[in-house]
Image 1 (cartoon, rainbow, N blue to C red):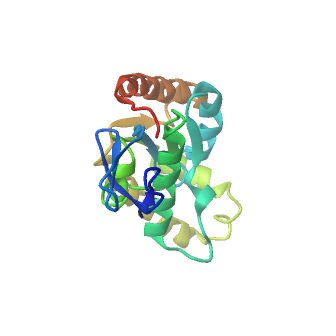
Image 2 (spheres, rainbow, N blue to C red):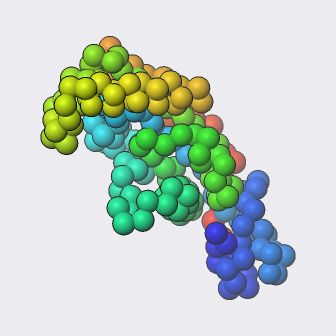
Length: 207
């Protein structure tokens, strides 16, 4: 999705690299902050929503949000959903704020998105939990309480399979069963802060 070029006022900016966007209309180069995107994923019951609430005060210089915020229930277009988040990440980066996005999103999905070049390195943090604990957590949710025991077992198995898939691309794995949410928050926040600092020197002034 081309962005508006500040040099020629044409929606022809794309192909970000080395903290610049290239305009296909005027051939100009527009400076841009391309910051890392931190993806917090995990199957249902891993503790993503709970962690987001604890991370916000720990990461005041980041935008920490849950992926469901931009879900369009009338249009379940996965590519459009991923594109919206990459645009949000890019927009916030122009103010020097990296995006920390929590949701059931695979790193490979974002890497394959046509607008992938709008962000810097994509870091994958996967929250993991044991099958029994996941089952107990999900049973507390109203919409899961409607499932029969058989249906619940099938859904749990699906989420176990999803977790195994997410773990393949994980840069950091945190077990939320072995630690409380405060401890998990400190571990994740510290890990993110170190990588934000490493990315900061390469930031270009926004155009």
